[in-house]
Image (cartoon, rainbow, N blue to C red; front, side, top):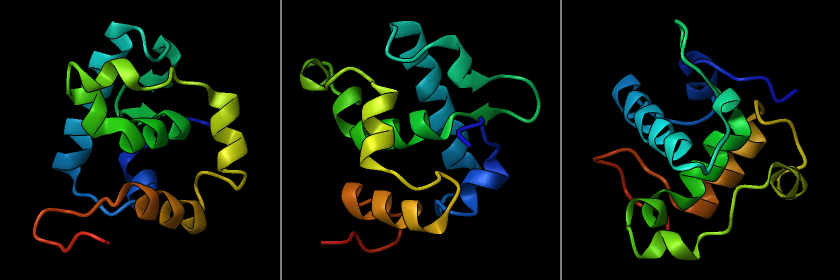
Amino acid sequence: MYMPQTYEQLSANFPMCRTTFCTIVSEIRQEIQAGRYSQCTLIDEKPVRVSPLVFIDYMSHRKMLRNKNARKTVKPFNAADLRDNYPIAPDSEEIAEIVIERIGYVEKGGEEKQ
């Protein structure tokens, strides 16, 4: 149910281009090195696959994690808590809508949700 997913699988529910996906994967790699996520959350073989729980967590905290002072206030990653907050399957359209709404994510050129 929470198997790592490719760009094609994630982009079916999260509106992003391949370049944005590659940028996010690169940032997740940095978080793995910093110790936020474990090595098994990102499979670096072609095609690259990312755990949907890590993807959702990272997208939810992306702005804060990229700021060296704000990142100190971000709670550590906890997959069990994330599953409780998002009880439906991560590959469904419903969870994508919930996450997009909660984090206010939009592609460049789009209007941010208020």
